[in-house]
Length: 454
Image (tube, rainbow, N blue to C red):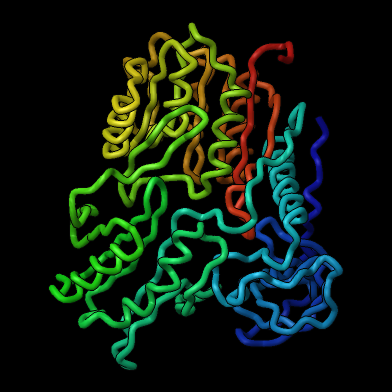
């Protein structure tokens, strides 16, 4: 298959060496296209500029944030000619908060950018294209995020507490009391949270605050010193008002302030409930998560008589629904606390054909006892650095179908190339819009072994 071009070009480096660019310098630029991370790309004097806050076709005045060799990082500070695609950014903090960088781009264009990113990475690093592109899995543009980390910092010189989100390309904190991507219960908490924290007697003891929402809301307060008794009472009263659990974390693991119902979320289509604790990995987008699990079951098509292997299994987000359709599921995870949580979730949902195992998935697994009998179907959902060591063992497992859920198209493409070398075909692929308003790309790919397409 001929290698496809990515469309991203860099200027040649011949000729006289350019003078170094100073941070803060301003430059008028014409943006040619968007990079995979959503920044605009421009070319001037043999340098490639990556410009946050700019769209393809726009002319902007940009300020240099940093430069290395012939690559320049910059931020658009003045819009001279706007793209016809540009829309008014729905959030008042856009451009200052570092969280949602694509708000000026209509949602359909955001999806198209993510689709191009996945296709270009597969072509560039694996020389692959799927036999079938699946339509994007989407949910609401806003009001989707059920987890958030609130930055809290005591400014000793100014004698004040800063509360908000990290600024773009900076460690500064942007004061925020409203965030439209949060689910509604967390929006209510966020609006009231700054006043609460500013009113504490010893705000210097605060580290940061995390918000969660599932079957209930929860607030985790990380503290670097013991909380004053009056401050603890204020936190408890606030949580009662917001119908939220209070969790505290000092030097050890997060602890619930009082015995309460477990924190969890439901996978409603399968009648399952998964419990978790603050600090556990949970997908932030409940709507897309359910659609993702349903698509994974459809694509992998586990059969009642089959053994299925779920790698990087976490709490059991995929493993529990898989166990309802399979003879046996072996779920493997590298974090002991998550293995224990997975076992509790399997027992709590009455799934005795689901077995959670602890293993370092960055190492060969040939000696693992659960490897011996093989698996016709394998699902893996690795972190951003991918699963190359595991993927190298797919053929030895006897896997006929491999479903790869990815949060990084570059490592997915690298691992896809390894699967192709073992005789697997990329049958189907598509993006999962887990993080609308951002350039973050999640994807799903199905690989099949054998000459005939399913």
